[in-house]
Image: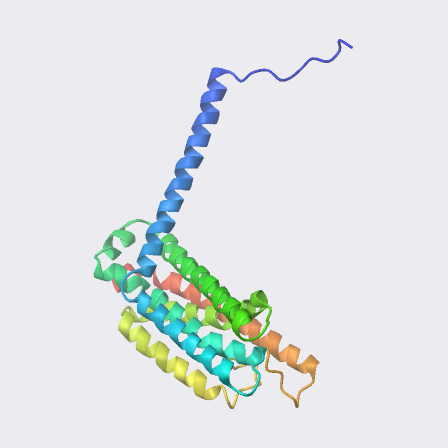
Length: 258
């Protein structure tokens, strides 16, 4: 009975100080992180982003209204197409004008003056822009569920994000290559139009970045279609990763921006 003693001994004064110091550091780091995220969200929503957001919702509501009053019943393939263009509008401004806004407000010199800080800033902004895009796509998909047709919201957004993430990464790359937001925007529009023109001849091809996963061709077996779809998704993911890494490499060249 007396062989065991309780180990619940109180902490010493030094140990209490250490615990309090660690907890204070964690709370301070968490507060700094929240302030950092809050500041970058303000940057994303600044200037003309609200106009792109309004245009995206206006287009979405217009297409939704047309689908409501049309004789034919829309399916998931139609919903995918109606959500893709608003998604492109939403990601367009915060990604392309990310660096330009800092250049206009004279913040670029400060960011590039702190070693490796610019990577954190622009990666966080890119991640926040994509997260915002996911939330808005979920909201639009939920509106579709209540107004038009019952769909799997998360599966729809998941499929949309392959194309949208690739376009966002490509836009980010062009912004770092051209160093001018307006020039990058024009080139991005031209590239988008080229892909859009080629989307019809490449309708069921793995090279079509606008490939609709819900529009299964009638003259193709399901197994072949799944193979085409998986190859298309792999290429989009690989292209997104390469574009982001290339963008970060371009940002090492300070003289290109400042």
